[in-house]
Image (cartoon, rainbow, N blue to C red; front, side, top):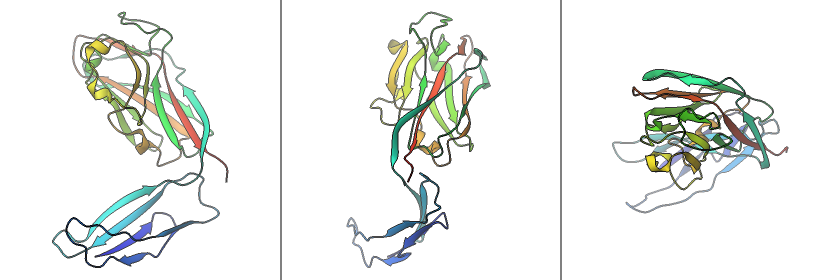
Length: 239
């Protein structure tokens, strides 16, 4: 078996580019070392995409894939960017939904990202003005976060049953409990939850630019609004 590794940037060099692994028995494993060298002008915190091509005896050969490798020293400083727009009604039973945007500046590449639906007082009151998203049937909703480069990650999708309102909810890849398991008895929905899709997928390009929260109500009869949410990002320490 042989492996060829290339980087996605001329400023990131892999040596050796190709290595032989010899014969590997079924169920066995074998390791080889590679060296990744970044040029002085490599963008701070940009992940290196390693394009890997594996050739072996078999009908599935060759097999290819891409592996992102983190670079840089993550910063301990959290920068938060809050939605400052008007209350946005969520159209009932309309897949086009509604968009709310936040502009991020001064971060560059992000070493971590969490997303919060905010609020000052959490309750299940219909039409509550103190919650981040008020809605009378959260299980109707699909929430998606879009990064400036167009990549998207689903935060929640048709879970939560007939529970009312999202308030002081943090979506974090490191959370133990997926929001996909949320029940109506958890309302008002608060605390830290794992999003449906990993937010790490939105950190492959610089974070600076316009981020969009899209919320769609996919079933009739219940209504609500987007009121308050924030992005929380860590950048990288200067080299």
